Image (cartoon, rainbow, N blue to C red; front, top):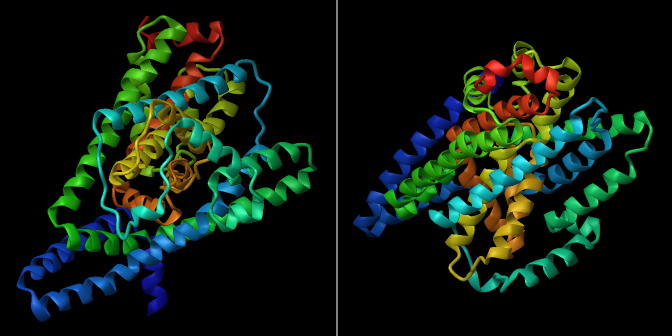
Length: 426
């Protein structure tokens, strides 16, 4: 009986399950919050109920906290060791465009956070234990010392800066290893990703506990904060899709960018929105590239590559949620230098985002570490990300995947461009 229930749950639609978890969490949270006004035994009973339910949220955040450092190290190292960037004409240009676009998306997220600063509900924050950087020099100094930390210590203490540095160094050193060794790293990466998928599959239960606890403690304020956060994330992603990406297309082609962008939105972004996976949308993008008459030897490499390193939506998520955490801690001041460094870190982190739904959220602790924010607090921010992930992750994936085709098109050679001029406003 239990096995049948578990199988039905595993085969079910995760988006619907998360929505059910959110709705139940809101209902229970408001119910328990209303009982607090009665005081006495009723309030005590309400706190006891929420205390029991909050265990689900605590377990979910704890599981994420445990697997995130391993995921970051393995994904980045494996990507560098096994990735074949290809020698097709135009690939160098498209890699540069991918990285530049991801950085610009990250910078847009930082700017949006400064223009519309938001706070998120965080539990059990002891601000006296946190060390806020005073200026960018302090940040860089801390960054350098974290980079050279022992890799085992970095893994046990969730030092994401050190993990990234060792993963990049180790990946570069092992790029020339045998194919059998590369297969081992690929198998390890697949195994860790399966564990992450299992943990994320439990998200509906964790989200139920987190939402119920937050609304129990803050009432409507928590719900309003979630809504504002979704608006800021989605608004920034739309700005990047229709303004930043359009600007890149115009600079590269000197043509009206919107026919191409609207085509990719219609034929790539919509399917990516519902699948919530750039990897799952690769066949759709391949078919669209063929329709645009792009060179197969180019898009056969650039589209799969874009699904792993062209992560503008992920960079936006990392940047905005990190600064929302910073805004929630009154003692931290962000300077221009700090913001610029965050843009770089968020862009680099986004390129290592996992291919599973919600994978970008697990890179948030990497950015939070820049501001001395402890891993426990950073993982609470990750939990908030999963709460709003039904919308955030769908829009993020739509931006990431549709941009792959846009940038592949503009990186094509001149003879190819003539064939898809209709999509560039000609």
